[in-house]
Image (cartoon, rainbow, N blue to C red):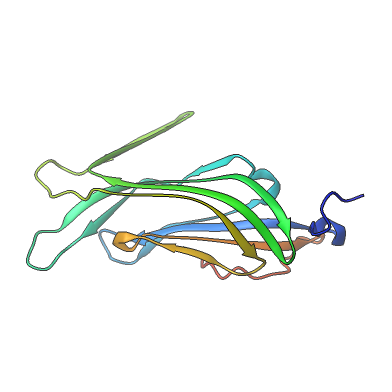
Length: 169
């Protein structure tokens, strides 16, 4: 007996969540970032920390300002809905002169020199998001930073039933 009539497991399918965090590369200006895919069942109370990155902003007639991006995504709850899933999505984006990331067996930091203008920007998002299968939910932020998330069903053979149009970086 299934707990939720919208659970794709009824059709021998499971759900994968594809998400990405992108930004313009501070050196080349080309799109940079990371894209990951996670089985939905593994996302309950899952925090993803994206890699540190440098961003820059060059206003007219002023020197460019630089910042270090630290971004985290958290999904605290999910449920199956007709034609998709609903997620409680939390995200924190923090751009400042200096950032560090410390995880088990992994420590890194990036800093903008003191004589270079620095960006200070923060965006916190906490909302319930309905994701129809195959539709991309997008959050555009300052300095060209973008977060995208999409849910897709996968069949028993491991093939995607839905297409998430989130490009590989």
